[in-house]
Length: 132
Image 1 (spheres, rainbow, N blue to C red):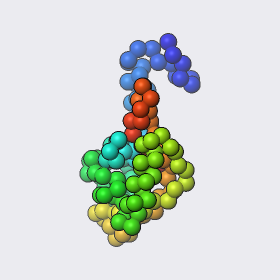
Image 2: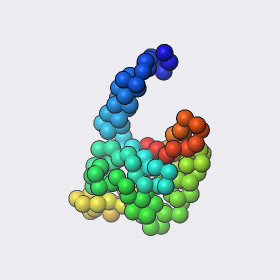
Image 3: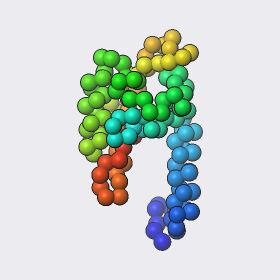
Image 4: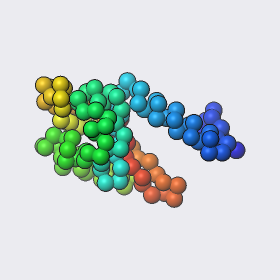
């Protein structure tokens, strides 16, 4: 049995429960949270991100962070930040500028102050980047 803080994981059932709690926390957070896979495509987008950008969770999934969601003049900067995060280098308090969609499109853009972090695979490779 392994101890993770106050939670103990015993078998795959408890691991599934732990993951379900994490996804619930991410989806219901009052802060915008999004994640990208190893090629920079959105694979996590919470309700707060949907509210701020006007882009639903379903519509955000699979879009390129750099080419589809970031304002044109910020593409190079965000691409560099994304590449750094995917190499395992974390950044804090970085401002990014995102496009808006739908009803939120009246705002044209939103600015987010983000922390970029990464998740590693069990063998030490970088799996994806998360931005909060």
